[in-house]
Image 1 (tube, helix red, strand yellow):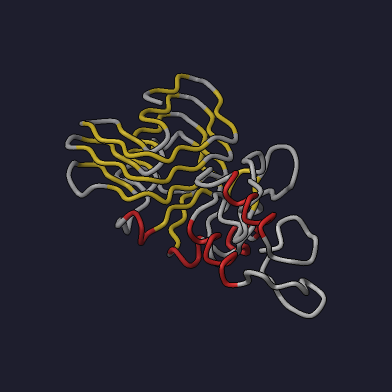
Image 2 (image 1 turned 90 degrees about the horizontal axis):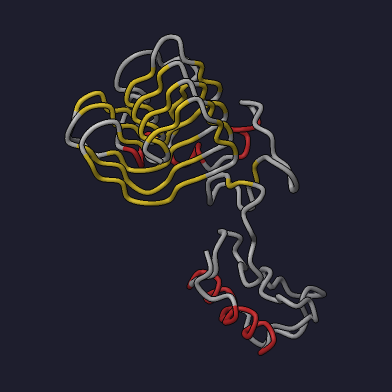
Amino acid sequence: MGRNDAGTLTACYANCSINGTSIIGGLVGGNYAGSIKDCYATGSVAGTGSFIGGLTGYNNKGKLATCYAADSVGEAGTRVGGLVGWNSTDSEVIACFWDTQVSGKSAGVGGGSSSGIIGKTTAEMKMFMTFIDAEWKFTNTGIGWLMLRPNEDYPRLSWQEIYAGDIVGMYGVDLADYEVLARYWMHTDCPATARCENADLDGNGAVDLIDYSILVENWMRQ
C-alpha cells in the first residue's frame, strides 16, 4: 500500500520486493494518523530517496502495535530504518520488532522517535518467548498470531491457512516437506513405535501413497 490516511490495518502482511524513490515501506509507504496492528512485512525494500523502512517509510501521528519487519532494507537513500524510515514524536509504537540481521540495519528508525521499536537477531525473532514477553496475542482462532515451528520460523497470522501436506509447519508445501516424506517413506508403524515427523498425513499409521497424493495435491501452495 502506498499510503494509509487515518485508516486501520489489522492482521495483514506483505511478502514482496519494493523498489522506488521516497516514502517506501515493506507494508505501507506512508502512514498518516493511521493504525497498523498485528501486521508484518517480509521480502525486500529499496529506495534512492528518503524515508525508507522495513514496515513503513513514514509514520506521522500514526499508531503501530505488535508488528514486525523481517525484510532486507537497501543501503541507498537517507532516513532509512529497519522498521520505519521516519517516526514522528507524536506517533505511538507498541512492541514492534525488526530483524537486525535480515534488514542489515542496526537502527530501527532512520529518524525521529525510536520508542517501542525493538531490534532482534534472526534467532531471537524466531523465539516464542520474544513475543510472549512483549505481550503479543497468540491464538488458533480470531485475530492474533501463530507460531507453528518455534526457533525455525517467524510468527504468522492466525488466519493464514495451513495446508495439508505442510509437514514441517513452515506455512507452505515444498521440498522441505517432500524431504521428510521421503525420509519416512513406507514406515508402517507410525506413531506406535516409530517417529514419523508428521509425514503420516492421513493418520492411518503408515507413510504411503495416500500421503504422497496429499502432498502432490497441495504442492507449492504458500
